[in-house]
Image (cartoon, rainbow, N blue to C red; front, side):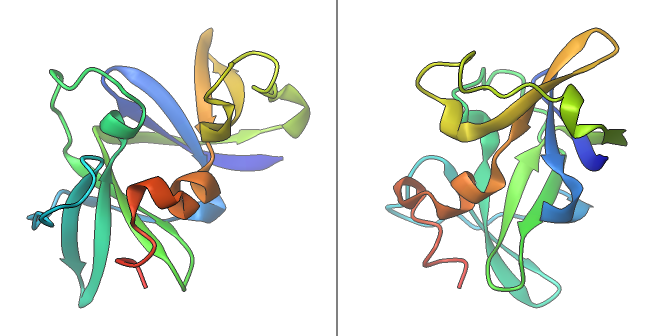
Length: 146
């Protein structure tokens, strides 16, 4: 069994493995970083630690008109933490790894973003690959999050 944090973005549910999630906090004042990629919303100071904040809707090319980014999910490890703008965290759920379908044969072109897909109450929930997001040089967050 694995545990996942289920959260909402523009009325769609996503999941992240709970061991990658450090905390979920109310949205803070975000300081923009000039000349940064559009996915990098800016930086925040969370209890004395400065970290980048990524706009997941931009990363996933989702509709930006539904702007309910009310929480920041802090993900990563001791070396590298990143805040992810989310609408809200919904739940923590246990899933048997056998019930998770791999996305490699389902989603063409963006399978790097996802670790799999699972079903919750007849709704498909994509599992985000946090290692890909944190390590992706396209978002230039690795230098900011050191």
